[in-house]
Image (cartoon, rainbow, N blue to C red):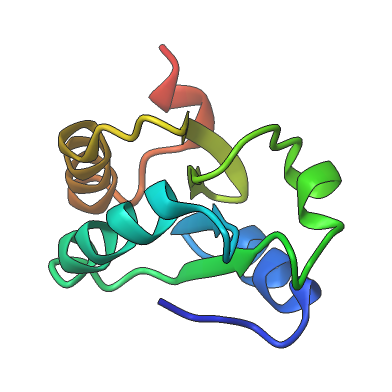
Length: 114
């Protein structure tokens, strides 16, 4: 996972990438540390930009993504948030959505919600 030096780096990639993932955590969060290796393992099967953002290093991340608790995992397609999970993350759902998005990369945002 990419750990950017500035939040704007992640925001620009999210806007431009067909599919991207953001994982927000905190250093003092034991659940964050337990889930992170599983998320990283899942991402080995995908070639998408994936950012790990530490809410302590980037305090503005909470307001930018409207996150109330960590860990928070968000999947974006064409710059739009498609799925968000927080605290209790279902990696099977995450994987299923990523597979669907990768298999149909030309699908428009509007078509995803028909």
